[in-house]
Length: 199
Image 1 (cartoon, rainbow, N blue to C red):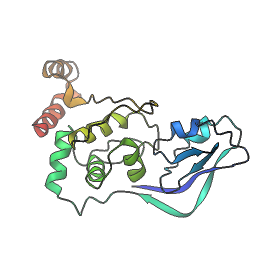
Image 2 (tube, one colour; image 1 turned 180 degrees about the vertical axis):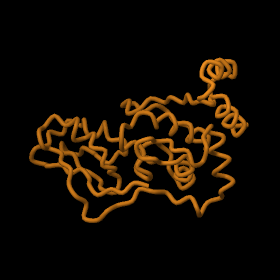
Image 3 (cartoon, rainbow, N blue to C red; image 1 turned 45 degrees about the horizontal axis):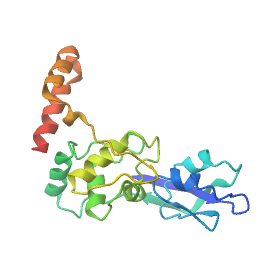
């Protein structure tokens, strides 16, 4: 669960309409229309990438929201066995945090897909995923979407590139080698749990 107290705001007088902010926004909360960027506060996850990338000084600022917003998808009203099954198919444990920055779990991400999310951007807007580094959770996002039967084409603007390698994808012989070299890491145990859930 993410508590958002801030969001991005565009100063229309300073915006040049370059579209860098639109390109970088992981939740597609920014659109440039008629040469000026606008922010959809309902989608903004306060990642501040737009502020970092903006070429016009102070054209985008971080402002306080009128009210705190929660980014969270409730899993309790869904079939728990189905959520567990889809997490396993993705090679993830239900309570496993798939985003180290936001601590969003696999089961919440699956629940978001079951409630209508069909793209990484929609998942970000619903859960707050990618509000931190925005890198490592993308693999998990693709694993969940694939397990839920959502097929994606790489977007033409290269907002992201589909990569889905996780522990469950590592061949067994490599896992055995890792286990022998680093027995205290329990890689083999985790691999077996994940691959059993997938089948």
